Image 1 (cartoon, rainbow, N blue to C red):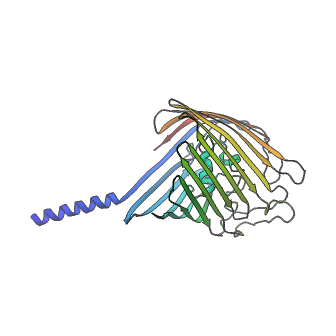
Image 2 (image 1 turned 135 degrees about the vertical axis):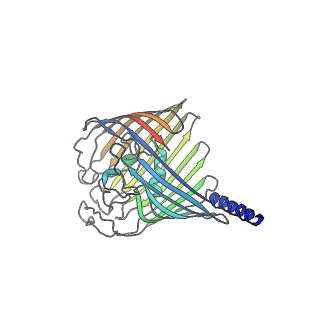
Image 3 (image 1 turned 90 degrees about the horizontal axis):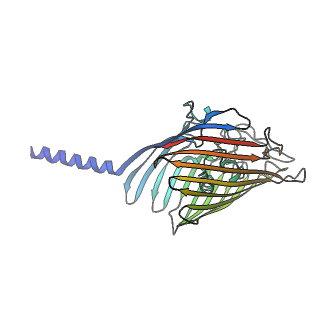
Length: 359
């Protein structure tokens, strides 16, 4: 009897240790609201990407951990996967190791440039048209132009598939993140613009290995970033950004990005984007405001194209996990980055009101 009791006690102890060493978390958010824009009727849509994810770590001993994360995107109004044509785990699917050397992961995820630049605009890098991340603060850069559903500014253009990702340890507020991807064909194509511009047919292999690197600094009220990225068709972008909390309530931020498409667009190779923004907290509420400017140098017509955006928003927190929001935005002189022609609706007013809940 005593031996049996000892065995049961030991099994219970080992089970407790195993449970402590392995942790899996289910997380996500759901965002839905009413949206009205100039060229559309009133509809139910989203301000933020809706996610459902699973992530976990396992303690391997000696400071080493195994980790994984898979994340899907879905549409809240229909329950379908995002845009009905994206991979199931569009958000990310990565596995790797973490230790004193930092973190190494393999799979699919945001490029380092795309991951950090969204932290320096008032709308938290959300894909909402009221914010600046998906178009102006990245200068309209496409990290994956050969991916299916990626051309034309689709929200899936900010992640590498078939890639290795590295995050260094943090030293005195400094950190370096890098990623490198293979040349594997992913189904898409890209037409060149101008004499001598490269054209990529569907299922073309990349001409170079894409890579991205970003250095960040976070120390008290100040934060900054410097990033550089080259995609699979040899377009390049570099960006610098910073933010400063003037008071606990007021935060100022600015971003500048410079894109070079000379390999695939010899007529209009250079695009620049700049954002000035601020957030101001008032109790459970927060005001968001910003101005964005995107410029494309026009070699053919000998003049430049400018898109201007003005945005104002408000968030009200009902709890730590739930907030209400309302946004108003006006974007003027919208143009095609490939052709330089004015968009079908060159000026767009955007309004939304909704609720966001995370879990």
